[in-house]
Image 1 (tube, each protein chain N blue to C red):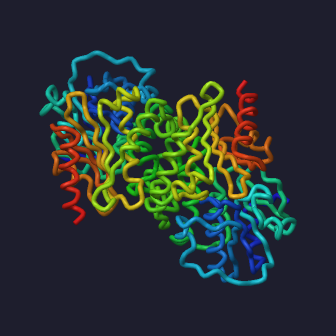
Image 2: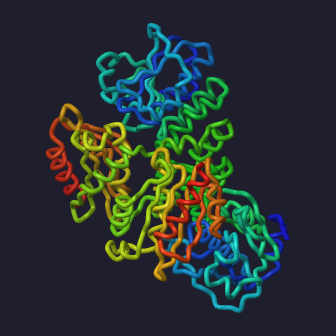
Image 3: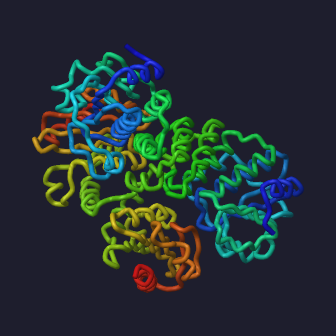
Length: 314
Length: 314
């Protein structure tokens, strides 16, 4: 059932021992949403915990490093920024069909939860901001850091066309409440490890253009990780680079996973709907940023994607 | 004399045939300030014009492409976002000592103008926003585009630590007034020409680290422009890359000019004041982004800069 912010806050107030699920391959918005909500619930005296199927990249440490993970038997399960249950990774096998509440901003949300607070917003954290306010919890600097992180990361640091005046206003408010915007953006956008810099160099050297230079493809293999000391987590930052070359309408980053399957990150401009493209391959996302998985080699996935792209661009 | 926004608006209202000077090697803030002010003055029925010593990069075309440059004998000269007269380039030989009004946000401003509206702000456009409001001119979508451009470019798209809650609020207001934030940020930050992509690849391949990897240096020579088809204008975008490598405190980009002199762009974090470093070599700027010129070769400039950096980092 679709619910509003008031009802969402009422449900959270009513429950305890709350487990907060974030999506696999976590980003700043799912983690920011999860830890902001966690902190608000803890301030209300509740017991709660955030879980994720993957290891959380070290750069997000400031979101939770001061917290002790609590052990308890969950009584209420909340998913944040999770459009479909399969985005939970392996957690879906445990929690599928059992999720009580979902707070999300993906309009492709499959409404798998009993109650869904869904709004078309640049970041789930903008909705969580409203929920925390509705809960009546004071937003301290730590909660502000979490919420700012989600808004900043999901808008490409306020860069994407989807960023609204409201996003900027919430950000202004969060900075006033103590969000350390400079440090957060530096961690999220301005800091590249030497291993990543080497991966980026390698990846860009192998960048290929297709469909009259309207499609750019970067592929990242396990071999490139060995060569550079980089890893899959760091690959996330490559995706936006594909779209930046003048004339490119679809940017694709295909990363090979350890089990030799692969994942493609899709970035587009207005002319192409990335979510539709991802959906064709069983994935999902937003109009200009989406992703899908392939049970085949990088080369095969590339072929399939380019075939579909050339159909779309006709 | 230092003046406030009210007095600045009064002076502008009092005069006509206004020449607006922007700094050489123009960026989004000086151009955004100049054209926003120009548009406001034109709406008031005044005659005015923006001038710059250099050719304005094509990507800024939307700031002024709908305007016809007016020909007139200037009666009042205004400089925007110009900290010192020598930043006017060759225009300083014509206008030095004759500038009536300066609107600026560099606290290093030498107060060369008769009247100076100076405030420590992330962008000159935030101050021009106040001036336009004080003039009583309605901010239309074109003026909003100009002002948004300056704020976005001078804050690295709201990324730098110097970005304030106020910057975000003004941006929100400008978006509501019609600023096309998505398109502007795409033009300013998300679009790389193929020639630039090649220059970046070449520059990053030549990146060197000094002082225990605390200083990163990129050098761009005229030969690299020939090889890639890129040019000096495009080099601006390289400067932020130097600071992004983990552990780097000073990022330096030295570009060789046609006359074999060179210019260094300096980027730092809190630990080092870039303006002080630039000042040592006769330049200027902000605490974390500054620039200076050298009448010597790139190699010699690099030597001098590294020597000074190693002293500072001791």
